[in-house]
Length: 332
Image (cartoon, rainbow, N blue to C red; front, side):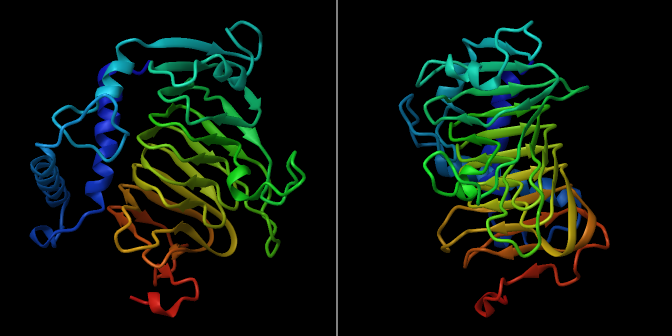
């Protein structure tokens, strides 16, 4: 079970998402792993110097870090954890994930760990913004699957199409969300040339979120890395078109990206829209494999920012690497 120390490390690692996307004239040549570690250490020290005098109170909105304390809100939440169990066989506290979430008090200040037993959970799950500090914890030997098949074109209860945002099987709006050993899935197939085929397995819109040993299965738009600071470690992400996309500021470490594209597609679609926007995806020590022919990314925004470092890329990756999405001004 996630310990106090481990979860604090998670949040500290997420803070490094800022750093992995920074650049400096002092560290222009990164020839080895040693250089990389030195570069990260330099950035950490520089970041600490800049933020050392910034106060951090319990009422602060979560941001990129700073202050003398790591994260007061998180520390307090971890000191008073509560655990709930979910299982479809009736032997746990709840039979559905949604039922368990509905019992958590609004504006919760405690770490709530939902221990989700193995099984296939066919439900549309939303973690609202008013429920921070929620953890989904599965069994590493038999991870539970949360599955759905909504697409952007599906008509919702209000009589209008869901669109991409609402197509997610699991949507997280809360801050401080953690998932460990969970399989997120959207089984809607990708039909080439069809409109409204976006089918999100997970949408993460809260900040300071972490995912360990999780898998994300989908086709078009699998993982909506919407907005906020996010850390992915030892995760498997599969899709066909733009299957990691959004405005997020995220670090992917030791992750596997698997394409199931039938023709030419793109792994990422990052939407950094201005030069001042703190947004971008960083992939370190990852593996890119699968079918089809893929670009590493295409420029959804005018200032899209994606970095791959120390990553194995199979022959499916196009030599030019990137697509400007038809915007000639981005050919640089």
